Length: 224
Image 1: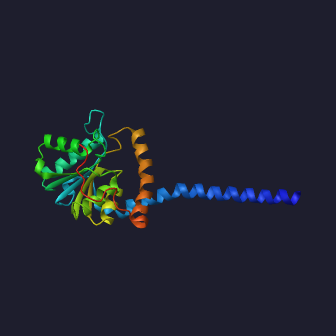
Image 2 (image 1 turned 90 degrees about the vertical axis):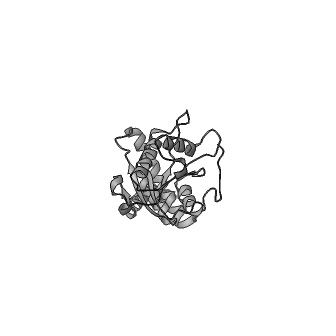
Image 3 (image 1 turned 30 degrees about the vertical axis):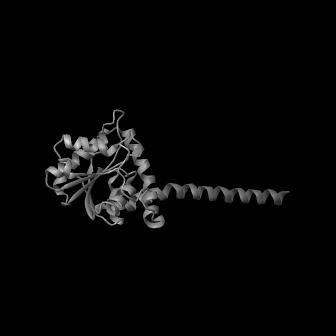
């Protein structure tokens, strides 16, 4: 009986160590992914529009809509930055990439309307209705719309992954990070940071392991 109890005790200790190692790895891996992506994109990220190198196209990522169908404050900030890039002559065209997978939700349509109201001619704007996530937006920008270099526009917390995905998918990408911490509530930003840390792991998997295509790999005119 004593031997049996000792064996069980040893097994339980081993199980605890295995579980502890698994939990540690699950916590450390996302942080390592975030640090890596931030490091390899650091020279391609800017916070001042005047200092960003000029490109032909600005790629702007969707960021949600309000109940009335207008851009969220976060999305409006992205489009405002893209409008500023256009006015400053840093880009000649804007590519808006977002979700229009259902008729009642049209991110790029709202982005288009918002930009035109601020003086950007509609002829200078292209819409990608199938930018369902960052990877899809970068993949389609290169594969469907022929973008080879671009200024990416998004919030600073999201910019490292956006630059990483686009660069690895064939685009000579630099990015402008719009304000986030201090511009939005701390609790909201903390949630976004946690989600982004997990998304960085998925990004490394998509880019380096699965090499998946975008959700849609052909032309898509949306459901607007």
